[in-house]
Length: 352
Image (cartoon, rainbow, N blue to C red; front, side, top):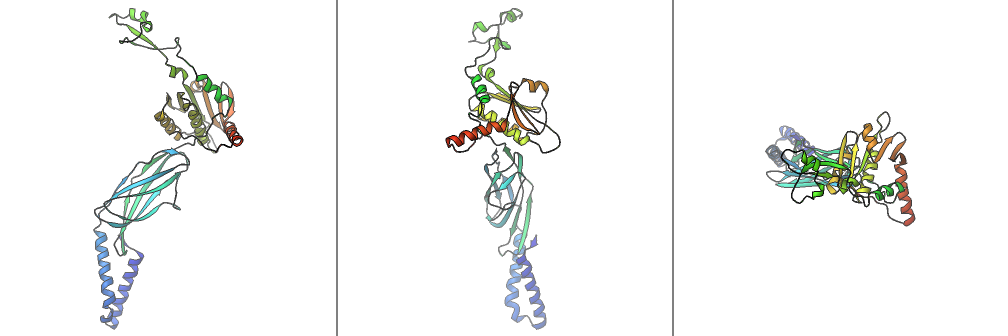
């Protein structure tokens, strides 16, 4: 608990008035000293009796670089108090309407909620918090600050570039997925026979070897598995600025391009991987993986087995398919050129 500037001024006036009353008599100064002294004591008592507010942070929705998200905090108190709430915005986030960390002056009563907007500036896991609440008496003479150390994570996805019709490479890959069917020779696994299974799928040789004469059925790759596209990505570690942000953008853009065409996509980055699938939740899983991309190299078997390899090094980011390498910026430039020719407005697809 401490005095505000106004509190120090009041205290100085009271002290000066007491000194003057000792020299000239108190009668003429009672009208000034008594109200100020009462206000000062009331401020000390009321501020000292304020209990610690309860702070409850709300989750912040993840999003790609460049979008805006709302940060909301609920503050619970026993009664109405004037408060100044100062929150801390971590690196990679920028308050929309504040120059620096947001400071909100408000009256907190019961379950009050404060909110402000931040712009997602940089990819990765960012944070908001800790927060401080400064309360004061009704006269603004005495204040007391409560610190809350809780933080909330904000996951920032890489931006996604629109690659529609950007290159024959992507068009060829998309065309190869059309009309794909399961390969009867691509064996997957054996399982017990269930009612409704076709007898032509029974694996008679395996069934004959089972002592209990139970039938077993051979399963093969599904159509989705046959159409699945694997993307592997690596960023060359070493001195100098990292291109991991550019790598994450390239992989997110490629994955979006094929997922929007209902093609299952799996992504491997370093030692982390998300298997092939489709759907909104799968897109979020891919973005969460790409939000945390760091420099690192792939194992040889992963690199060789990928349908699409995305590699970032000192020379830039390249997309490699069947030993053909295309700079990622060339794919983006092709889209930009098409937009300029057709007058289409710029804009990307958000994977969320």
